[in-house]
Length: 433
Image 1 (tube, helix red, strand yellow):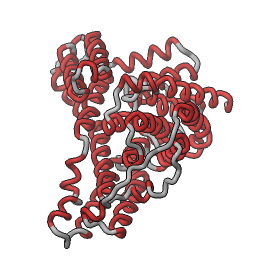
Image 2 (tube, one colour):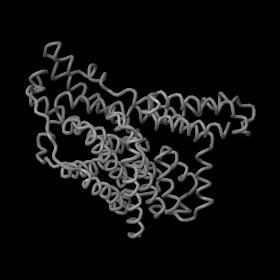
Image 3 (cartoon, one colour):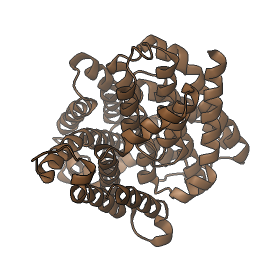
Image 4 (cartoon, one colour):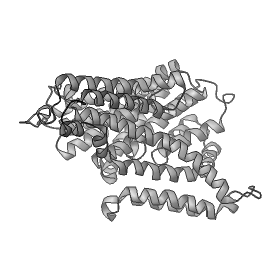
């Protein structure tokens, strides 16, 4: 059964990658994969966990599963809350405040501007929230599908690179920061340049690919005329939405509660605000701008896709597959650059959280001191390596769901470029150290 779980994971992963060819929705495959992996754990529990004693495998694994579901739910609720806030801002035409200010028409210039905004915004928010916000901006500016997918792919790379050098920008960096392996000031000073290089290399390559200008869509009827949204309402909802998203890391720092609590707090604030400003309007207008209506636009299949993939990875973690993988890396490779480089590449296939958790469990701060090169490089590799495949990071999965980007298209057009950025970032870190 131990081997069967690995085989099932590989087959499920291939089915997700070949979604457009086999014509089976990736969410259905991911959910089946998650359930089957845990079912195989139950059937093979006596061989996988020989020291369970009299404990029933179902009881032991149910407890483990519920523990993982708690962690997974943090990501799902965060995603649900952030996407709802962004959709509400969009319904009030809030993103026109940004898009109306964008005067550049050349595609390459626009790509540079949006990529740099994403890179720095990701460090302030986090890579998942930033990718959702930038996806809403891209929808308003770019209509051509090929251009949209390429711009969106660059946003994934920029968001992951921007999150890697900030202590609050990526979940794995947060883990290392809270765990005491790194300090905030040091990770910023040591990883900023490698992360910037990881974003700049693909950005330069894509700039040569993009030719021509952006043709903005001309709208004859304003959204404000349709739903009765005043400029005041547009501005107050937009800036309140941005403020509550920026407050999420502050909320976490103050309360030490998980980030999804901060997002839900922000969602409640924006929800109450919109209820107040629209309460005297006609039923038709009020309903169109209420969260009860807007939440129906949320891409629920993407959220369920997250659930299935993370359940499958959790099964590998519970079964000891990832621990064994970490041990194999440690036994066969002694260079911290090789170990962390491989962890980054593997994080594009397997979720980076259990990979980093495995490294944190294997090495204490006695082996590698606080702010050592090992922990710094681990933060960089785990944060940026996920860009190599589109389902290798939370930002990638979110963008994939929003724009329906094909896994194989990303693999053919983007993966090698993202990998080059990743490698050049590691080389930059080596030069600096």
